Image (spheres, rainbow, N blue to C red):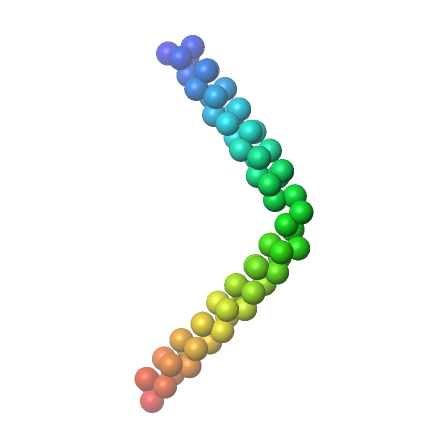
Length: 61
């Protein structure tokens, strides 16, 4: 049983390494745009939460 698991683990590890390398290569120059996207999405989420809280407080009155 142990011998049949070894190739599976090796394949999963190799796939993880290849996937990580492909991700790094494809997203190497996009760090600024990714940070801007995260900031923009965070701002939108905070605005949405604020609107929901305001609406909830209005409904409680």
